[in-house]
Every structure is written in structure tokens, then in C-alpha cells.
Image (cartoon, rainbow, N blue to C red; front, side, top):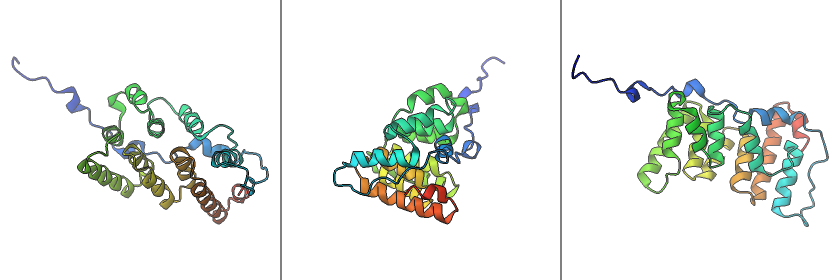
Length: 213
């Protein structure tokens, strides 16, 4: 019929629910390799001649069997996930390179969390925007979407709160990686998280993991 409006394509593109693509294990491949890291003596307790960078690299080698720096570990994990997957988008945000994956993904595959992550990326200058972001983070945490919540905090520049989200949810590996990425010189804090992770491993029957500390 003449004069009838064609339906908007955007109107029909309803973002999928966050539950459709909630990330349960952000570092799936890194975690699966932990058990395969050969045992060696725990990293040296003689810190007198080692810089914080030395200590961090030594710790990454001992725990993860990783001999490069932390951003390479995150990039390695990201490369193992399909282009446009939620895991890859979240990790890309950790590295500050979300645009490529968003463009490759296409709007039809994005969840509402992906849209919100994109919308909130880089905000933080205005109090009202920050308040909106934190409100959405709280909703994500209530629904159990811990990784999306922490990554939105990263996007808003609240790196410390992102770390605390992981610590409070007993996700010590993610907390440790995040601290190494955004607070690389904070060796004491990294050490505290390693200790908590070791205690958690013992309590959950993962002595083969805890023995490295």
C-alpha cells in the first residue's frame, strides 16, 4: 500500500539476553593448562635483588608456565576464542582493543551486555554516566554475570573495583591477571592474591595447584 512505512530493521534487531551468552569461564584455555604446568620450586623468597617486574614474571612462569608478560597471556587466550564471541569481546576490552571484534561480530549477534559494554566503554567523566554504569554492573552481578560486570568496570576505568569483584567472587586467577595487567608494579598485592588463591585451592582439594605457592 502506497505511503505505508517499511518496518525499521533496527526495530527488529532485539539484542539477545545476557543469559544467552553469559561467560562462565573467561580464561578457559589458560585454566585448562594449569594442571599441565610442570612442577618446579616455588618462586624465590629472596627478593633483595629482584625488581617488582622480575617478581611478576617469575610468578607468571611458576604458576602459569608463561614466560612472556601478562598482556601476551591475555592476547593468547583471546586468540583461541572465535572472532565475535563474548569471551573474545570481553578480553579485547581488557586489552583496550574492543572495536575490531565488535565490527567483526555484527549487530545481530550482540547480546544486551555487549551493547552495554560498548556504550559504557571509556565513560567515567560524568557522574551521571558513571552512576548508570555502576547500576548496570550491580544488575549483572545479581544475575551472576561476573565477567561482564568486571569488564564494564574496566571500561569505566575502575580497575581496582573490577579486581575486587573477582576477589569477592573467589575468582582469584582472574583477579591476579587483572592486577598484573593494570597494576604491574604492585607486587605485594599480586602476592596477596596468590596466597588467597593457594588457600582456596587447598580447601577445594587442588593441592597440586596449591603446592606451587
